[in-house]
Length: 252
Image 1 (tube, rainbow, N blue to C red):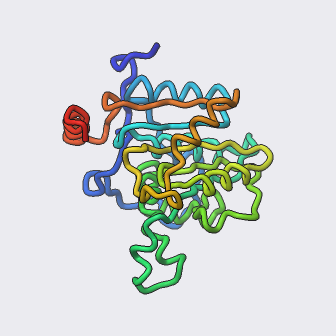
Image 2 (image 1 turned 180 degrees about the vertical axis):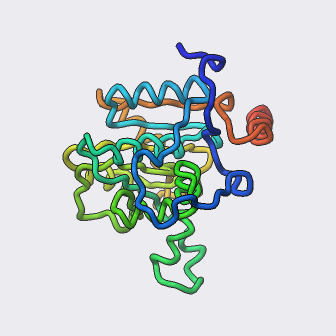
């Protein structure tokens, strides 16, 4: 078992504070390569557990639990590391999200693609830190290494040779989750990231989170491996950690 003292960070893993982690691109205009990717070590035992699980060849993974633990960042880090490595078969990182809040911004100007840009902000920020350049996410998409797709646009396709990151899966109903899993093609792996306590779905028969149903079914499959992060794993900031702990103590 790896202890926190044994695992020392070379960089902060969770990066949500845009003011603290803004960088000017040092190689603007250059194509992104594997050696441009920064190196990050695990900050907690559960983060190290994920690294070990991933290295061990897991291809159906669930990263669940508290906000601020680095679920999406860790998934993107390992996925991009593998996709940029020319020695394996993975060609692209595909990030999938439900546009559950799109109805709230439907009145805003712009087409669907322009409205979807707000959902890509977490991946833009994560990519900026991973590569130390503000244009990293856009360059990754231009080079075909990354793709963002909503659950409304995923029907009818097969995703081969890819690492699929299903983010905020607590905001997906059963139809969306079932559709995503049945899109997984040859030589692909899939990582689910979510926290049921952060669901934005209305609790109705039509729009109910399938988070628990998904885990119930997935746990019957030998391929499925999951990690449940706790407040002890929060690395975003001490304030976030104290807030989450206080909320849990009071039952919120």
